[in-house]
Amino acid sequence: MDWDKTGFKYQGLWVPVLAVLLLGACQSHPIPDSSPLLQFGGQVRQRHLYTDDAQETEAHLEIRADGTVAGAVHRSPESLLELKALKPGVIQILGVKTSRFLCQGPDGTLYGSLHFDPVACSFRELLLEDGYNVYQSETLGLPLRLPHHSSPYRDPAPRAPARFLPLPGFPPAPPEPPGIPAPEPPDVGSSDPLSMVGPSRGRSPSYTS
Image 1 (tube, rainbow, N blue to C red):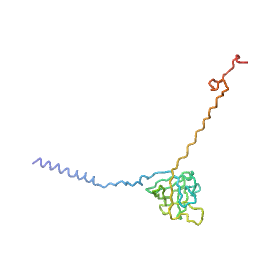
Image 2 (image 1 turned 135 degrees about the vertical axis):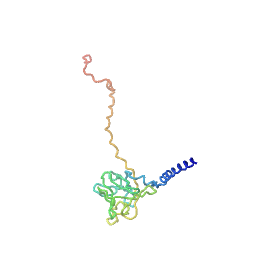
Image 3 (image 1 turned 120 degrees about the vertical axis):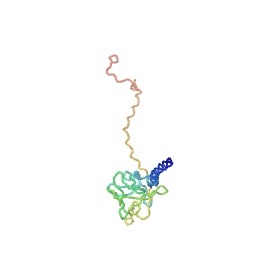
Image 4 (image 1 turned 45 degrees about the vertical axis):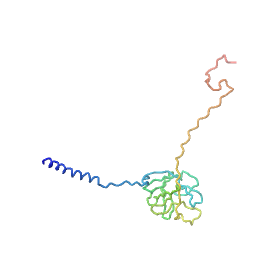
């Protein structure tokens, strides 16, 4: 009878312990987001943005030192851009050479700014199945397009999206080391064509003719 009371007593002690363990197990923990876009958080890529959509010529987006944004047929130091993720699907674009951020005005005009404005300089990056990307202002919703210079009356930012192909930006090649001069050809008419015998410091009178 006493053993039954003792066993019941110890069983009563386990009740609060089990309650604490169950409470800890039942607490809700945040489920990590498995979205693949989160892997780009803080990622920095160097790219040239190439487009052939409704342009007079194939062009690479350039951010120039005076703040203008234009297109160039060939890749150049001004077209090398740094794309940095601000949050999933949203990036900032920085000209590597000019240190200017790509920004967009309310009328859709593109310009390069030395200061980052999250309202004007944040772009949504939409990945297409064919490898091209579409960019649009996160705040204004206007698509990123290179301006047409053929007509001053053309809308600088038409509503139709433009496709850009991000091309890898390779770092500049290191300077080549100074070349080593090639050895002079042996003098076949000499008694020492391979220059194996060093120059003599003096001449013996015995060899004087």
